Structure formats: structure tokens, C-alpha cells
Image (tube, rainbow, N blue to C red; front, side, top):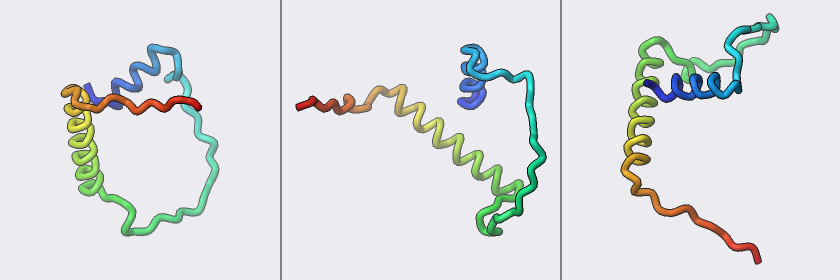
Length: 76
């Protein structure tokens, strides 16, 4: 199961979101997107692959348990 799907399912199960109604208000805005910052289908696919790779790497790090203990600060 992908992380996003798991997150959405968890939110639904905890009644944090309701998937019953989706609304769009129809507001029109002038676009302001630079061509060098937009993605075509291939670019989106590459971005998705990189994102999934990064998530897998973070999950491996999390499962390894090699994280140092969190830093705690004492109040003076």
C-alpha cells in the first residue's frame, strides 16, 4: 500500500475527512506558470518515481532504527 493511500485511509477511519462531497467554486484566476517549472506526462512520471524512491528510502531508515535519540532541552 502506498503512503498516500495509507494516509487517506487512516484519515477516513479517524473521521478526519469525509469523502462524500467534493465542491468547486468556479473561481477563475489568471495562470502564472513558467514553462521551465511545469511538467509534461514524462516529467510527472519521473517526479513520481523519484518521490516513491525517496519515500522507500525514508521508510527503510525508519525501519532500521538507526536514528539518534531526540534532543531534549531543559527549562532553566
